[in-house]
Image 1: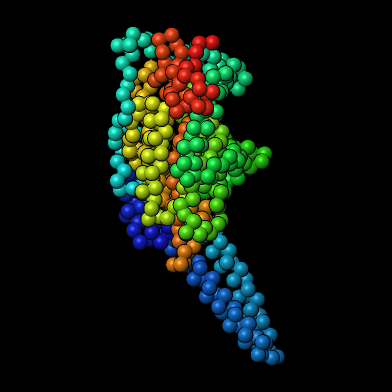
Image 2: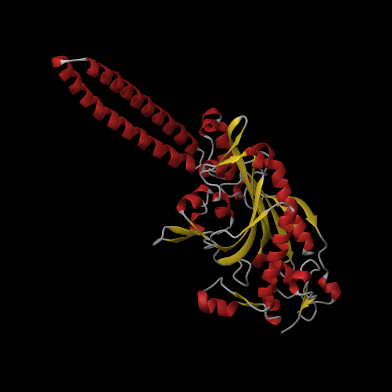
Length: 423
């Protein structure tokens, strides 16, 4: 949620942000108009309430006919107080709904444009020359079948399209990736968490996932609960309605959770394999930090993601995501995209977003210092999205016979295995 005072003071900046996202600028005007209506309603309520209190004092001192007359007036005022109070509640609700419709203000450093207008910040690692090695590139599906790691056919039989089984080495690889990710996160001061995968509407809305992302969210209507699409949601809501101690910041958590996504609008995209699926597991970093440290914290989260990619020996690039491709909560986002040899292109495997105070305001999370109560910033970063990481691992480390080399960083978590061999 954007601070209402900021909208009042600098509406043009909010409009520029909305325009950069490709979203409505007239919504800003609607918010300002609703704010005027609310303040007028509050003024009317307070005036009638003050008159009621004044009249109440006179009633206590009056007698006879004068008292009867005053009592009659108090009844009229009581109705006016009730009606003006109702008008305030209605105006509050309308204003809140409109403000919740505004996305976070984009960082001025973010490139402006749509999905393809990102800026490449750097490319890291060396892409293998498979032709020079005499290897015909296989995709992750073929590799997964050869080593007995992925069973898509039975996943579809049991659950439908975009579902799968990780079997044998595939299942073991997931456990190894999670252990490596958690181990590295702990060295950077993150507290491991296993959060709930079902959350109340307040948590989902507070993190900004019931706006533009709502079509991709699974809802259990009978229970009024949502399946999370990322551990970001329960981690962000962990301190909902709390006032934290400023001296305790930053608070860093790393959560492991299943993630559920409808993948609405992805018809025909990535239909083969496990790159774009309805369910996957993920290790997610989350940070609560002072507003003044948010940009530096964002760079730190990106560095942790890059360290993980390098440990897996996967070539990747980092992009600065354009404003039109940001989630509603993010002011700026960096993606790490792994090289996928079978597609001969980079594909997103992790991302990290600076959400500034957008989520903390919606979730009513603040910090207390000697200066008083202050807003705080929230940031998130994917350390390991399991299925996409497996895609990149299998394809970049494939051998001529279809086996897969295991990166050194993962070997301790796989009993020292150096390869996934053919089944």
